[in-house]
Image (tube, rainbow, N blue to C red; front, side, top):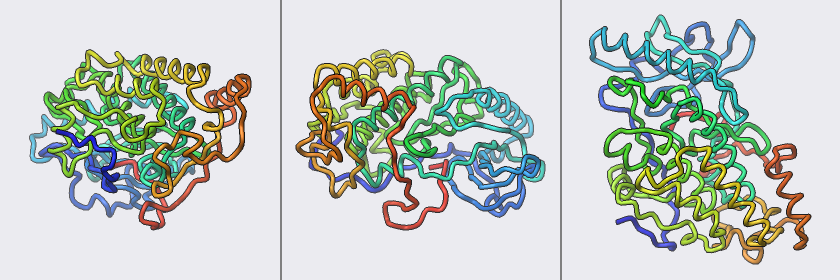
Length: 384
């Protein structure tokens, strides 16, 4: 049974995604000098599904991120050829998506020298949302804005019948100011694709839903579950399902007994908690049908919080707070740290909300280059 004690300390260790058995990056993966036409500058990330490089495109003279993808090892040419063909087809489908909250895919291909598939992405030098959340608690307005942006990006993909399959804070990258982008759509797949026959199954503990753990089944509702887990952490600073290892965490998810985020922080408004727990329902039939429905539900819940005075206007002016300094009631003006006074005038609430959700004047966030251990992080990683 999952531990639902609000006194349990936040873990500092995120369990990573696992590559399926029989898949590997290949020898010499991290010593490359060139991938296709792209000149490797340095390795900036390594994870279960491959390696990410900072590189230069000599043709367009721009800095990009090149991500190599693990491929089947020890299989026949026919199986490998089918895998590479499907990878390119589905990665190209993802590359057609243009959305302000999705990391742009510039190119996909197969490296002739190494025989490995790769994607070329826009280079974002900021940290990941996982790194940020490991250091700080998010203020309420900012948490809602990030969740809305992610839901919008996922909803855009779902309308094109593309499922991400690995939504998690490590795949959300800082794009400057208060903007974040969802990465790794290139290893997503179409819902009815047969890529799973020789393809990729990402199991990121705590974010993969029960049906993915039991059956390897991914639908838009699977993305909704992962989005709910991310929103849960944005609100409470905690992950809904935390265990010491993958097996234990997955067993908690299958049991489906995550405590509501209000258990960790009673100041979280109930309408927002309800949205999160609906997204995290163990049965996909009881979740939002897709990310667009989740986005609409969150907008309505946020409007209710503002219009009915469920939250105090000063809460919208709060800043990010380090975990060791954050009060238990982070979103309560008496327990949080507002940076500017505000009154109860409903017109002021509407004005603040308009700026917050329109994207015209995002709240300013000072970007950092240090991880939770205080070490310098020169570049982000898109793989965890």
